[in-house]
Length: 573
Image (cartoon, rainbow, N blue to C red; front, side):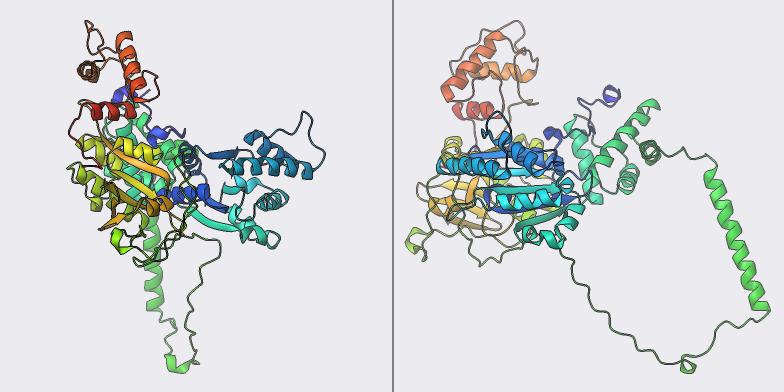
């Protein structure tokens, strides 16, 4: 209703978990890192958070990053019996157990174990993700624990990720579930957004929707934070109502009063009487006058006011307060590893180009000039933003992490875009451009490095504030396929292009394809994406080994720029 009024291309505050509007605060980045840890390590990963803090949105983002060699059983409705749980797991993984339900739990376990052994031999892994896990009964939780007993001599066949509200953590503290609690290898409690995050969050969603990021005044943002307490779902609902209120009043900015009115509608409160502030002030004044009169009366009549000195009273010794211990089951943030520590080898790079893991040599070969890609000092988001800064610098763009701007929100300001991928070394070598790598060691969260060069023997990385040269073997043991590519957009870029679009970038695309001998007959409107241009795009995609769908997405833009030899940083000089 209000989109046209504010010049928006989409509804900015929908409560649907649209990946296009994904905003990752530092807390959400940490939670996502824990979830990714659950993809590559055995045992249990536990993520808790209050209602509306973004657990489901994180889960959608996680599923988009699923490695191709990983099978996922995703359970949305955990109100199940033990047998129903096992049936659901089998159904999700495509395990055949006959037309009729099996007679015993053991039979389900047997067919599931047989399937897991078969997939393990073929080089695949399996993870079970259970959302709203606070609804699981203790009996079902115990059965889930027993599922992790399915293993070979050296590897667990199942990985489990549990997401739920805070009461899930309380449930796992029960004595009868202590065995399951002891198997949790990583846990994180997702907190609401901070005041600064709320401002960035609102601006991010408005910008993503194609609007002005300054629609909400500073007072409105402060009110939004206070009323929502930083909960993303409440922010969306209140902000949506506030925009509607501004539209009804014909205003182009949202004030604090509009946010408060929107919150009253959301929470079902009656509108405040316009004279309520007057009545409140008058009542407060009456109370102050009454107190003053009482004090004057007491003073005039010299009523004793407990003026005894301390020497007339028995001495009381005050015990020094002992610091409280941190409660068990609280937030467990991944520990920071000192710069001198060495990473523990992972399970190997599980992608299409993976080979059997090779233990790194006990003594580093100094002749190779290779350093182990050990985790640099600092917090995860600081290390990550240092990696982004190095890649932006390769593009001659000055990104300042101290401004706390999200790197991928900064990219469009300098004609760049971020593309998050799960791929292989052959893919990175084919792209031949600097990327941000997500690396893992023995800690519970990843760390990040900028891959800036390759001389045929060693990769050159920026790890925090230092440059290191790393052998392919050492890097392979720390990288599991996740990376972010920074790429340059064409003039006037506004997203992917497809047949039927009418945009100035279409004319640029048509001319560039003609330069590469993929001619599309010029039409009366070169900015229109017609049938002939779709055919030319498909032919180009076929020749490059891309998905030939006729849609010009990020990979097609990147490959097109590469073939045109447009100025860009490369890994190999």
